[in-house]
Length: 358
Figure 1 (cartoon, rainbow, N blue to C red):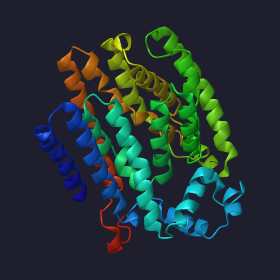
Figure 2 (cartoon, one colour):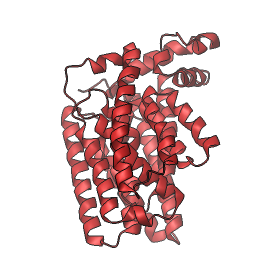
Figure 3 (cartoon, one colour):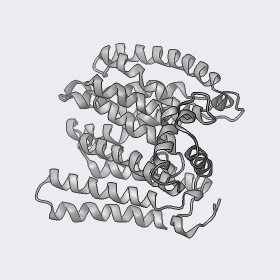
Figure 4 (spheres, one colour):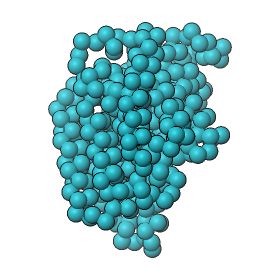
């Protein structure tokens, strides 16, 4: 019930703000700011021990807080495979407070604020974008427990926004990589962009999709096998089809192509979004039937709610776009309900000290 009330409040914010704000830009800015504060507080005040992996992160935070700076920088320390940046961040935060809740609250800010800023800068239909972000279980919902990758995602989005300014983009991407090794899939996009693979030359782009699928899958398997923490994913007998990222990214690539959006995009940031969606589609194809690979599509899926809104700006086929967006929304709600059945997280505040309910 708290998750539903949380969502209803966000919708209410939008309709109130659009009525009182003097213009659309200020309404958008106030709405995103309010939703950002709400989303950060809702996650920061949650009892983290209701969610997957949080107990491990809390224990790690307590251990890292007792380390010397030399221990933190040691590439062979116990948590080095989590990412050197994440270990350093834990150590720095522990100098302010050694309470694990402080870690979770800080990560809420660091993972949500960049996402909201990116959506504010890139979305042409901010309500739809925020709704997808809040409802799709791999975004806000899973961010309560899957801390490192969602932290990395925020900085990947910043790196994407500044991708034309390499002096900003590359350091941001490297920082994200220091939080989660899977960010390595973002770096080939710099080459992809230099080859001007933004969808305008569809035959050239499709050829490169195939090349990227082969090359990255080979590299990913070898990188994963070199880390003992992740190698078991490739040996897993579980079947992960990873079809959902292919559907989301592939469908928006198809819609952008059908509606000639690739040919009409006029702004550089929009071209970058269209380009990374096409690149992300190639990466998602790699993950079909490959255990553990689905996570690498998360960075591109986060761009998906903004990419869809390019259709609102550039397509004249309003009915087709609305039907498509409604279909995506219904599918996202279905995924949320299915996710709740498998992991029925019961929200509680951290001071209630409620133990895991699933």
